Length: 375
Image (cartoon, rainbow, N blue to C red; front, side, top):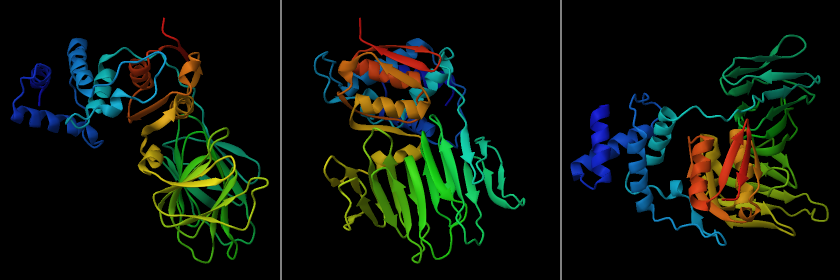
């Protein structure tokens, strides 16, 4: 579909003049933007066309107007936009990137850091091809793009490395036993360069990671996190233990045993999780609930999902995802809960979406964002 025809079709849509055949054509056109393998279009839509389409979408989503004293239950427009048009949020993101002025948001280039067993620290560049060697020059690990793979060697002594992922970045690590670890932003993982035969496999997590544990019935695998240990033989699960936030584990497949390590709570009993369950640390107990695991796992694909979460927690997720600092000067918003799903949106797209629903103002200075009460 060329630019002229695409603009004409959008215009007919906003005027309710599309035939069924034209609607089908537009849906296929929009759906094509969901595939990362498709080449980027050269289309350029003017601001008037984009505004017309947006107003059409806003009318169909039926999102309630903000009440300054009661924001509870708001559903973000991006989360509500499906209306039979697959991938529409992606198209608006594409249009905004190609038609707007350059963002004035400056993101600090915080590096991924690898600390080795001899107390050396080195910068890991995403997309690079670094190799990690021991003191004798033997290659212990090699990097390809955004993944570091440890090759492992026979050893009787545990030597630990630690990888630190800053805000705004993610990374993958394949341990010497074949376990694949997806590391979220603002996360560190301490792990053996090579596991020792006859000893349990154990890693230490601060932040959030998704584990695809290599099966080895003779060597139990344990993730040591804040307040909990997660024990497995071979399974897929997510653990989140950011400082000041809820500590939890979510199971995708297999089974895991959760132990409560908090002072006064230590016991020999273990809580067993089944796929689709979440174990979360509450004040006086470990609570297990059924959840939609996609809400907890899709960060691996670059998605950002809020499922009835308070704005205070959402701000932390945004800071981690985009590598920014947010100062909320509109404290009434902190306990307000929102639902929404974002994928490739810029930080400005995301904030503008919240602004539409919650009626706040914001300003950006370098990588500092200040949220302000509406005037």
